[in-house]
Length: 195
Ligand SMILES: Cc1cc2nc3c(=O)[nH]c(=O)nc-3n(C[C@H](O)[C@H](O)[C@H](O)COP(=O)(O)O)c2cc1C
Image 1: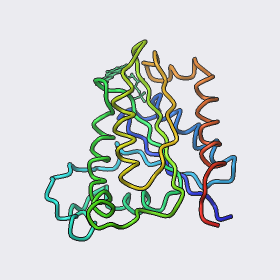
Image 2 (image 1 turned 180 degrees about the vertical axis):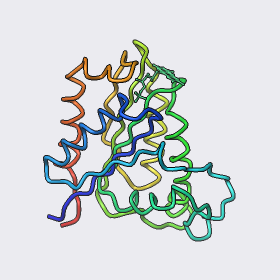
Image 3 (image 1 turned 60 degrees about the vertical axis):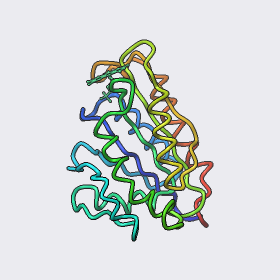
């Protein structure tokens, strides 16, 4: 078996916040199963808006050169992708959404040019954290599924955490840390990464 590559994408503007803490736990779980795990913190990546120019329709390449440029390869070569975002106004953070919109060139590779994005058996999941007692998770889940579907990643489910608001509050709910770790383990155990 080749080593499973796991890419964790943190979409919180808050360094070391609740969603990022859960993502780090998931990546620890993945590493414990022998995966090569890596986290990208989008807030530090200087990613601009998709401009809807559709230039990527001709070759699957985005014309904007910025912090997103090195991420295309990481996204395409990952066997497992875990998105982590706080709930902001009942959806994902703008930091995460900006990254997702810039994956339009990968969408174009698949949907316009008929190419595969990445290898076979790619898997993905979402970690979503909200401060309210009953946050609206469904919009974030829907966007995550839409992205994964567009980049040949099979959606494996989500870890949602409600009533987690101030920074570090997630540590008061150790079962969430455990669930995150198990999520990372499970995603690697089930990975069909090419031998
Ligand atoms: C701009 C903004 C919008 C938010 N909107 C929601 C919301 O709609 N629903 C909710 O449950 N929590 C909302 N929250 C609370 C965050 O989801 C919560 O603080 C979460 O723990 C932040 O995760 P982080 O530490 O990973 O950044 C919002 C927070 C901010 C700053």
